[in-house]
Amino acid sequence: MPVQSLLLLSHALFCLGIYGILTRRHAIGLLLSIELILNAAALNFVLFSRAFGHVQAQAFALFIIALAACEAVVGLAIIIRLSRTAKTVFADHVDLLKG
Amino acid sequence: MSIAYGLLAVLTLLGAVWVVTLRNLFRAALSLGLVLLGVAGLFILLEAEFLAFVQILVYVGAILTLVVFAIMLTAKLHASSASPASRQTVPAAAAALGLFLVLVSTTNALTWPDYPAAEAVSLAALGQELVKTLVLPFEVISLVFVAAMVGAIAIAANPPMKPPPS
Image (cartoon, rainbow over all chains, first blue to last red; front, side, top):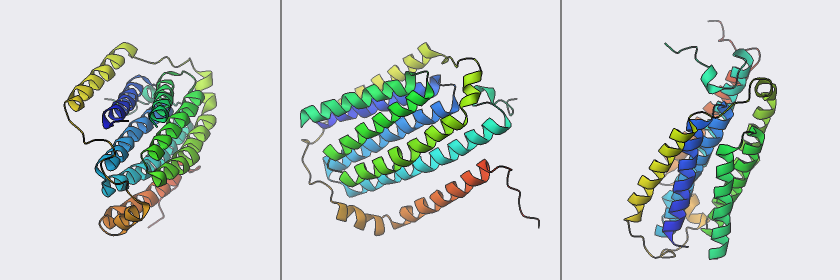
């Protein structure tokens, strides 16, 4: 399979993630969409690493996976805290700091 | 080979559509697992076996389990309230589609080398790169990871943690 069609796939993953972020109201749903976007980036890195024989691209795909784990852990901790204090899990109900 | 790519691509795309459209969040999380497995399969086809294993271990093994736990823990909050209708579906779809078209038109103009032009990256080369050239980012990532774990425990602790008296 040529590079172009896999690039199309990662573009589609990225744009579906953007769509999810724009439409989801549930905070965990937002996190799931962010995971989609990060996966699209990792897929791009691995694809270019294979196409150009570049080692550092794979290393950065590894870093993306590690950072995605950090982001998911902190995000879920915040959501659990939110569910306890604000009694909601919907991102647009949390407007305490809204002017 | 091409058939395997196509099957995995279809699986990934279908899962991704489900992730963003399914109303039931638990099913959306399971479809995310499908996407992650599809991407791991693509990694294997791109001869990045180690990354595929890391992807399955970290994403499907750890992150997805955490997400499912969080959905279960907050289940009564979104089951009781009114069903969360997704908002601004049409403008969001237009924005995402526009972005997709821009990306496609940008990358379509580029020319790529014939696909298996270079040697596949070996695991030994990746390991050496991580402890030689990229040793600083590697250590920074470890630090960020520890900070994230400690921070997550501090945020989610019940009762909330207090700073020590000075």
